[in-house]
Image 1 (spheres, rainbow, N blue to C red):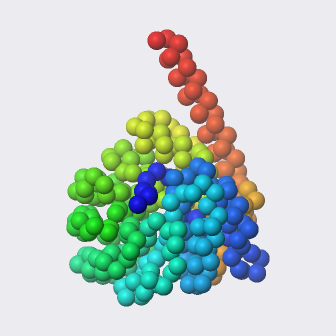
Image 2 (cartoon, rainbow, N blue to C red):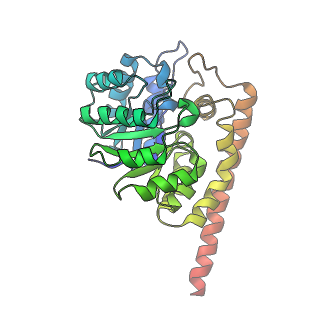
Length: 311
């Protein structure tokens, strides 16, 4: 099995003017991102998977598999609040070229922790591909508690978790309560450095769609144990990252991608495209982030060079 550690982007799904999947723009996004990423995530939350048909998801997946310029491992999102339906869709999708399944915690029905465990065990038992848990309580309405994750980690076909709970204490409990090969991925871009510092393995990112080079450098620094440098590198990206969520996700990230010419900012109802105010704000913050990130990199390199001369 190819592993899922380091930096990934939860890829957006670009749309044409008439609302169809824009495969040309998707190809451009892959060229923009994949050389800087360690793996790719298709049909996650940021892909607007809730409003993509089965056929569209399959077509997007096939395109990414066939146009994966750096042969990155691929994780594909298949989740829901009907366990049998999730299993049926995993069995129905053509998953050739896919390395793992990302499956969101059941939403809306608000299951108990025992229900969550039974749901994931059923999926993991049925799937030929390894399962990555996905905890995002702000969207699902229920938190997958640390004890639940620790219990599920003993299943041989459950390989890790993407955790977007935004709770560092919970992250620490999971990391220290699971076996060494269990993968812990951050689902919050601004919390990834502290999560890595307590044993996390990487991130499934939103900002990585727009700034893959800069953000992957932040994450690589953290994974190499240079936490102070990673935090300093992340600081210039904070305001831009915050603005990406001002009108919801993926509204902000698509607006930012439109600003740099990679796709239209169109989204599907009930989401609406980013406002002109947001577009202007993101454009300004992006320029500042790129400039200040590079200034910081140059300053740190100069400081390091002085230290080496003094030795």
